[in-house]
Structure formats: C-alpha cells, structure tokens
Length: 92
Image (cartoon, rainbow, N blue to C red; front, side):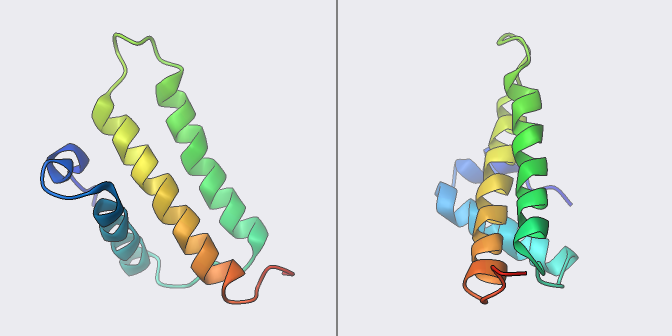
C-alpha cells in the first residue's frame, strides 16, 4: 500500500514520513537485506524511479511521485545502513 505522501507532508516532517515508509517496508518485506549488493540494488531502483520523474517535462512532473521516491530513497538508505552496515554485513 502506498502512503499518501503529500497529505502526510502537511502534518508530519520528512523524517517522520521516512520512518513511516521504513516501518511499512519492513512489514511487507520483513527479511533484512543480506548484503551490500542487495541493499545497493534496492536503493538504485528507487533512484532510477526518481530519475524517471525528474526527466519528465517540467509541466508534467508529479510532485507526489517525486516526494514518494525521495521518501523511499531515504527509507531504503536507512534500511541498508541498519541491515547491512550496522549489522556487520558489509563484507558480504
């Protein structure tokens, strides 16, 4: 389920929305990331999705889609930090 990012941004800070997204992602995909390669691939996917939105003509860019991707990038960066780097899986 996708969060209503623009609506949430009216009531919560960006870090709070990222925390909601991270919680949502962990609920849907509870198994932790197993390696730096896996974490990077997930993060790269989110960056590519943001890039798809940024490349659009300025008149048709969707602010909600841009915010969604930025939140997901931040959440997946935090997840990679926690699941891989802080868990000592950097060498895997």
